[in-house]
Image (cartoon, rainbow, N blue to C red):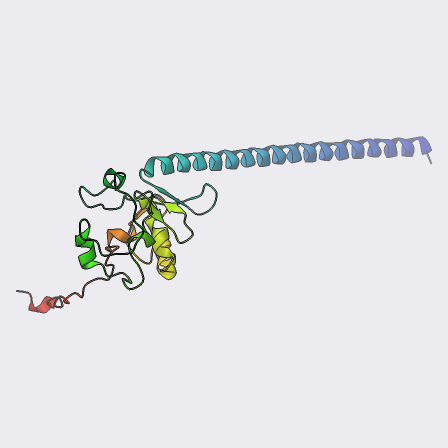
Length: 217
């Protein structure tokens, strides 16, 4: 038996085997590198996409909010509202009250605001003007804690007693909300629908039902 030929065949087989294994290794490395690059590119694209979306949403929010921002925590914008309705010639209150000595004695108003006294029906047995209006700064409302509020934040004052209504108002169940479901929303204040001095709605006469279609000529 020629051992030299057998040895040569084995060396040739081992050489081919090594080349095959190296080729497989190189192919695996190329595939892994391509997969890694593809994954990195995908992550970069997703990051850029969401970053651009957030920037666009922030800019859109800034443009939409023109009057007031209701903030729940930090800088999170909860919603935007319209300015509260004021009686012509009444606001700013300090145009007159800055020249009048404050009087904290509860009394019936006769010289000014007697029109409000005439209709006042908001727990009138226990409340009067200075429970909600600040005595020293009439252009501000006042919480029970003494904290001053802008008139655009009057919902917080109402919410001290009407907590469940405030909760429903914030989620759009109570009151009127307009706007986009995933964009700008505007909530009307309580005082857009309720007179703060006599908030209860008057009874309404129901309208007749619609005429059935078959009875329409």
